[in-house]
Length: 177
Image 1: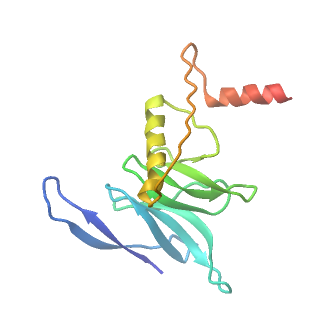
Image 2 (image 1 turned 90 degrees about the vertical axis):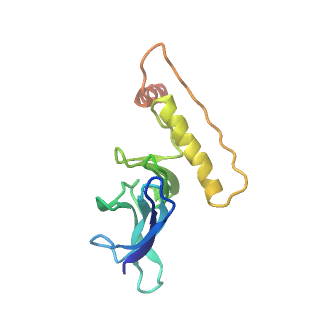
Image 3 (image 1 turned 180 degrees about the vertical axis):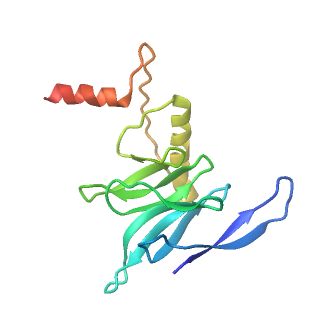
């Protein structure tokens, strides 16, 4: 079962829109695909999956990203099923993934370095990029029709010495031993 998707593209300065049907075939090991989001660069995100023959439910779900140049590729997972729901023009993908304990977690994928971040964790990076990420995450629920979103952000910006998130984790683990 392939997925048919209509992609909108336009030439700079042109007002005409060009719609084109594109089939996103499931990768080997999957029987179906479902697109969930598309950005202005034509990158599509969604999930590949199989269908349980008894219940008809989607099983073995795996998030993917697709573009016209590179085709489809799966996104990393925490350790279980996953699904991508939205992508912005920076290549940041939102969705969910199950962790090793079987809990569904909100996640953020960065397609520029193929990383996955459990949004229940801390993220490390330059303040300007992290604030862009926060803005994207804050806006996503509005794009899905939510009328109110509360976002809490804590920024720990230390400039007297270079530290990384891994240093903080080591420090905390050292104190609880």
